[in-house]
Length: 206
Image 1: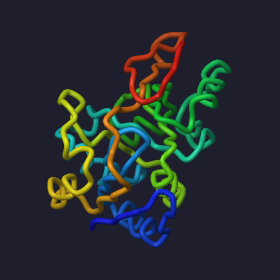
Image 2: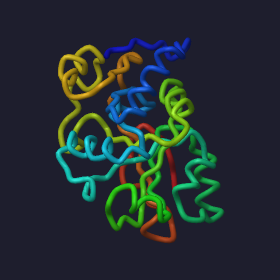
Image 3: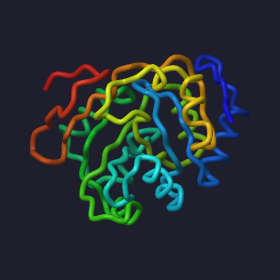
């Protein structure tokens, strides 16, 4: 299915159809406040395996981000946030940032792994926000393009995305031309002080 959704006048009927696909274990391609992404219901194990297969990885090896509706939902999947990290999250989110945080015990069970960290996002894209809000729990997601490859036209043009992936996913949402910069990735897990692993659409100075 291919849905055209105006981010400034969201059709909740189409959001409901996309959410129905997510709850049934489907894969959905959608716009974010950085590049187009692909995702599934975080709580649907079969869908997680399908998403990993799409990315040509085993679930235990792949690195997905989880898209949350707010900091409260984010915190339910991470360990206690110290004050500097919490302050940074509040300053940056929602926005085009991925924060690497210390995961709580939910994450290893979801991803069949021994992961001690998790990438989390709260995007500023109205369509993504509507999806997560309607789903009622986070979306497991990854950038549509391979980060080791240059960003090609079909990763930004919704019609090209449809022609390329229509047989591999359940829903593709056209939310307008995609951006070419990925999210800025900030590691708040490895060291005591935050470190920018990748500069992208989100501007930050540490």
